[in-house]
Image (tube, rainbow, N blue to C red):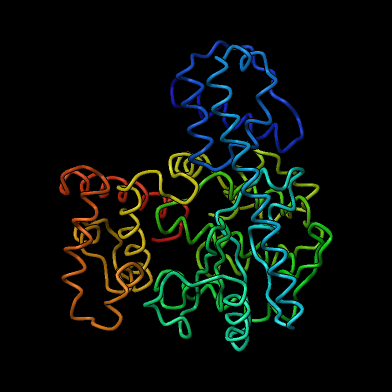
Length: 417
């Protein structure tokens, strides 16, 4: 199956799921074509939704039973794990609430609750935002309940985001004291538009439990800027667009669209954000009327075609290939240079030798010993070769090619000049 056709059928199935409909395909596909199709579904982390849409269609019935069972087993495993993670998370959230810790749940379980089958929209983690002064108490409750921070070398008391895992469990929580890393030159200033989120919080019911989250306006803005952040790195997948579409369709009448637009415009993200809704309307289930989508957004005349192509290639978090992941050094550098009034460009040097702030995320020893940055660069290059199985020069050249193309997208959507 050609790539374009595979993408077309994938988007069709996703739109049908969001609309509560089933596929009725009669085309004859080979086993290999079906496997490639479901590989794309897994890369985009929407396998349960797509499987639910296509398993009754005539075309699917031609698959060998062994292949059907393989795909069905993967789908059921993902849903089962998600169900268990959801239950564990809600138990933990109740314990936080009982101790008068007031976290706001963002993305994850809030977005899943928008879908008719919440656990079919799987999440790799759950995100909690807390006031900084509550971190110590929250950390204490987490550790009492078996959650540990895997980054033992990191100073969790100063970090803006602290990850937690639980032994013998798939539960993974990112505990935020800020929504975006403030040290980032490219998007650290995004935090400035979320100063009053705790004062404007709202509650919602999930599995019969009251949880608190961002207001509809703040949450839509966060979903857009979170996608924007990933776009500045190596990209993101279609699932995030589904979340944004579902959220807008559900809470549209409560969203201050003018405020969202003005704040996106501060970071040159207004055309990018409007392009996501263009994709949502053309390819998914975005309803302008239901979402109360205003003329100020429509007048931007956004075109999401090239953005859609990028996100279908990206994988769910821009991690479809190692070369693509490493290209993020160039796109982030381009944004940083543009903010300084310099000409944005892709560079092999940016791919092989990122700045210290980027390296510190993986090689935490640099924070204590900055003079070891050259050692970390060498370690990173050898790690890159092992991951890709390629000669570093060829991998780096591919990263530059991807970086150049994606910098072109940054210019098209007027993120950089």
